[in-house]
Amino acid sequence: MDITMNKFRPALLMTICCGALLFALLAAAQGTEWEALNREALSLYRQGQYARAETVARKAVEAAERKFGPSHPNVASSLNNLALFHEKQGRYADAEPFIRRSLAIWEKALGPNHPDVATALNNLALLRKKQGRYADAEPLYRRSLAIDEKVHGPNHPEVATDLNNLATLYMAQDRYADAEPLFRRSLAIWEKALGPDHPGVASSLNNLALLRKKQGRYADAEPLYRRSLAIDEKVHGPNHPEVATDLNNLATLYMAQDRYADAEPLFRRSLAIWEKALGPDHPDVASSLNNLAALYQAMGRYADAEPLYQRALSIREKTFGSHHPYVVQSLNNLANLYTATGRSKEAEALARRVEEIRKVKR
Image 1 (cartoon, rainbow, N blue to C red):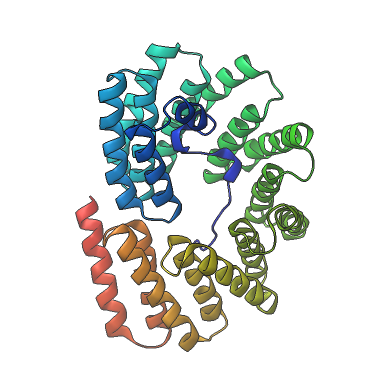
Image 2: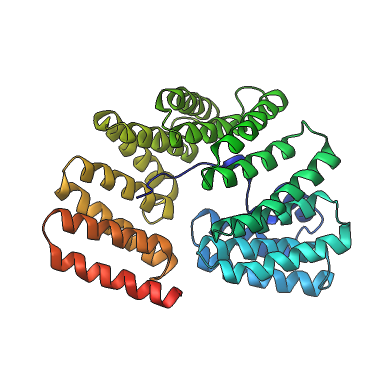
């Protein structure tokens, strides 16, 4: 059971209006309907209200098409956002045509070697990765990297982002020997370009720590996680969601080593931060509840684990609908708990529900 929430923040894998491009576009469109819709969609996204963000993003696409024409780069930016909201709901097949159209617009309007084309290629690669289509994702990531190296030079933060993303793809395939030099190069670029205490460096350290953890190199992973945590606490303060992510990831390392007493206060602190910062019904809160429940289950504290699993399931059903992979994960977690406590009938009922979901997905 994968209970780790990995922080690949500097990768900006599915950007809102392509990251920095957002601000340039909005500056050129002050007071327009399109700007207002983009702001509303971004706000809903940050609140974890992906379905509502999708509705607003569709209106933003329509507004951009009316104002700029169907082949304008601003339309591509709104299409990119719309794809993001579909991806966040696990609707990868629905997201793909929006990403492909945004890529086509940018290539035609800006040329095949423009940085925005690299962004679209990266986003399409992420979608392929989410679908398990690793062989399709790799050439897209590599082309994105080639564009950014040509445009920015080999030591630019955008190149570090591309290296990081390609490394995460390799890590997902257990290609650790391929991933490690890319993670190390991306970390070196970020440290030199941004300084040793930049949040991007913290995320790069976190990714390298995750690789160490997957390799079973726990002693090597811990100082990387701790340095990431120290940077984020210094930059953001002790109650920021990024700090919660660091705490969570360090806790999962401790849990992998059966250091349950060390893990529990970190999981509890991360949950408290997310609940306060994001609200009680945010998807990140559900993941945090799931992680703490898994810890309690591993400790044999079944009565403490069950309500946390149930609350996580409720949040995920409300946010993503009844057929999302996260819902399946929560159902499986509860079923495993029921099996461990001898509640076979309840476990079988959940297993049947999981099978029904998978039949629909086929």
